[in-house]
Length: 134
Image 1 (spheres, rainbow, N blue to C red):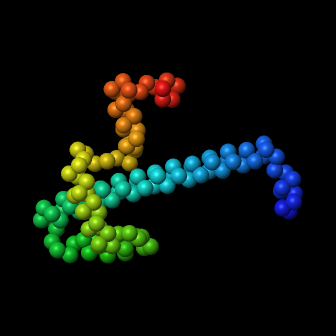
Image 2 (cartoon, rainbow, N blue to C red):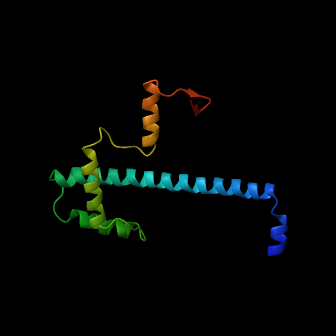
Image 3 (cartoon, rainbow, N blue to C red):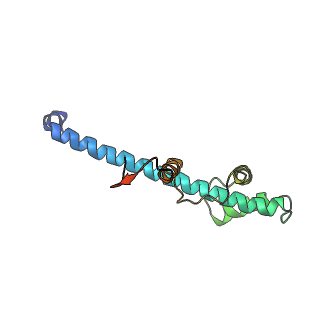
């Protein structure tokens, strides 16, 4: 489309429509990325727990993590992020966060801000009406 035709077509209503659609697209992309990150963290925590329980309690000998990494590469060609050092980092991630948690975080857990909101509702700080804060 010619730039002059596009300039002539940009009425305030059209500009507003583009702005609204753009905001919806960007918000959806943000939510998708946030959900992917949540799933990844849950996966890394679970793998870290499994590896920690088996390697730290003497069920596995030395070199098993390296073997697991090599076998994963063979079974899932093109898989990235599961080198021996990455798996050890997942174990460390679990061991560091396990001290702070009562149970494994689930992918669908509330965000921290949602947690504070729920706590505020319980304490009577916030009231919910028509899905909006008051």
